[in-house]
Length: 524
Image 1: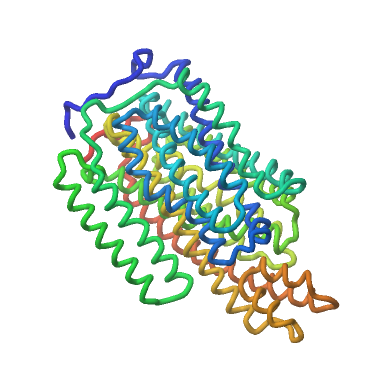
Image 2 (image 1 turned 60 degrees about the vertical axis):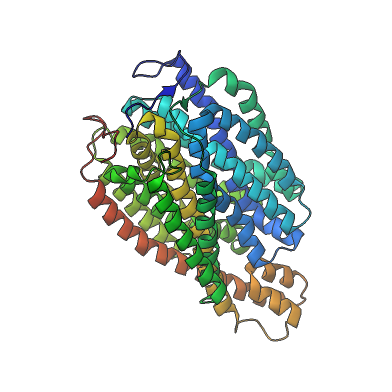
């Protein structure tokens, strides 16, 4: 690394240990986490309602869910580097303003296409906020123990948003239109814009070069076609266009990597991957997020469309999982002072596997407890993975590269989450359609049968127009098919997550507990 790299900082932020101002500033940064949490979790509850009101097809539903994460993943590295150059606080506040405006646009969308576009804009705005938040935490809390605690506090705020979001969102869905849930984060963004300039210090890399726009274009050209192609292949099988998209993304990825090696000031410093802790932590975060995070899509639909819970009651059913997430995030940095991160992260993944296996035991009629318990276990097991992996990533790079490192880490996790929803969601849809194909009762009109074979939400809408016993029989068949799809996704996730736990244990075993010594901050 360039030893001449300098970072400008607020003069009040000095010394190796953070003081009162840093901790108050952390509270401001938690507002961004709260907003992102509300946006994700409330949308999961609102998806059935907005899909029905807007007439969204199965493909459009996936894009409504996926496009936010896709745009986030595509731009996080760029925005992390941009924040290092122009100032992390400045970029955070720009993103907050844009996020608030895009939230209003999403709330008043009049069709699936408009909502997908608004979600894309939310992803762009979110990409400016997330790496800036993580980089500021890394700069404000230089002491390894304090940094781990700060990250866990940030995660608790995220999980608190997950608790408040479903409850408030469920109440809104009970009394207002689905678009009202997107307005929840607007006041939080307003507070961030008011208090951020006062409480947050500014950091930027004074030695950073110019932003290479060609690298930005190549990164987008690599990520977006690859994600699109994988998504289409998972849903429709081997087709010419998706295969071409994946190959094109791979080709652009190779061109991107070659360009980064030639540039004096690359968009993505590939030398960071020379640090074993950095690479292993980022890879584990991506895999764990893909396998455990995507199952939430099935769980929220199970609560509402299979178990028949109202949005508010579905939010209440998610509270045990929120509580275990908070517990995992708070306990992880404390345990990490005596236990190696490898054991905590891999052990947490093993707990997540147990949760996924519990979900496979749920039936269409009597599975509410199994799903709620399984979801709580997966969230408990995810605490060490998220908190300690993020600490390893931020702590293993020079302070001037904190924005880039945070962007890379969030790119991996958001890519994993979006890809998990795309692949596992498509897998579940395929299993649903295979099961429902021959299970539609005789006598169901052709149009209603077609809707039922598309999605579970379509089956519920079609059944509401049927008379006599046909509606109950159609609903029973559709719920059975959806539960089968959820089982397949959970089984697949459990097997792959177990393999990820073993690999994480092997790659991170050399990292000592935080109470003994901090891991190296330079790659290599």
